[in-house]
Image 1 (cartoon, rainbow, N blue to C red):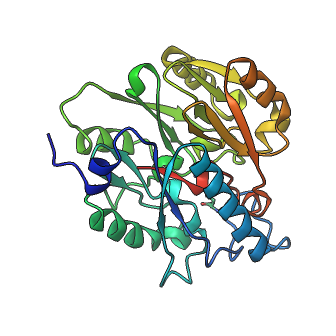
Image 2 (cartoon, rainbow, N blue to C red):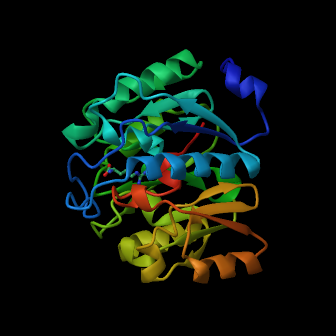
Image 3 (cartoon, rainbow, N blue to C red):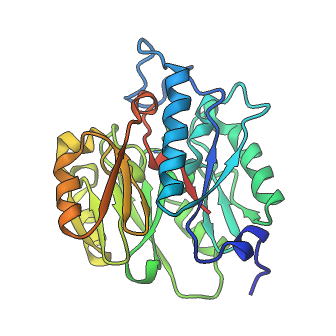
Length: 282
Ligand code: ARG
């Protein structure tokens, strides 16, 4: 077994989350349909929303680690830590961003992971956008659902399988994203536990919907709430933290015993991301 990281050794049994402070967050370019340059971000409000998300995660039982954005003035999207990497044990398979605007983020995250005891792997020839496009779920959380077709390339799957191999039994499945508004898998799919996930069916092609259903039970989210980032939720135990105004799915989840906690993520939604995008499970 690989040597445990300091963090993992100290905090086993707690949900650990990495967040990056939105010091330089703004709309400086448009790389997805949500990013309307006319809108402009209220940076003070963004910082308050991010702090509120952080304290909501903490009071839900998560241990939040903060990465500062020092030196990253030209990387306004670095707040979306979900995109940095996907983690398996002590290995971090790093992102290789599809858009040149975000490529520089990799080096900051690589430094953080290395300094915190993770072994960094990845491939600079294959586009892959971290846990924004790769979510663990299904039986014993042994299925990695990888969103392909918009940002992440299909050939990332075999490379991830090889480089995150730890001798245990787990698999990767490809989930084809077909709607440009749902350009990362975490905008349209969220495993709640090993049995069940919420998803927006029409973000995926038919074969994908079928394949996903073989791995986990799926609760559909309406088009209205999917566009309100209902699927971009963070799960901490029985708590599900998501952007406000998603009452329909929240009521369904409450009936299943989940505790939905709403946060206001309006400033980040202008950039195409919500609660989950601002977090990375480490
Ligand atoms: N503006 C960012 C982009 O388009 C938003 C990233 C959202 N992150 C996520 N995990 N869905 O890349």
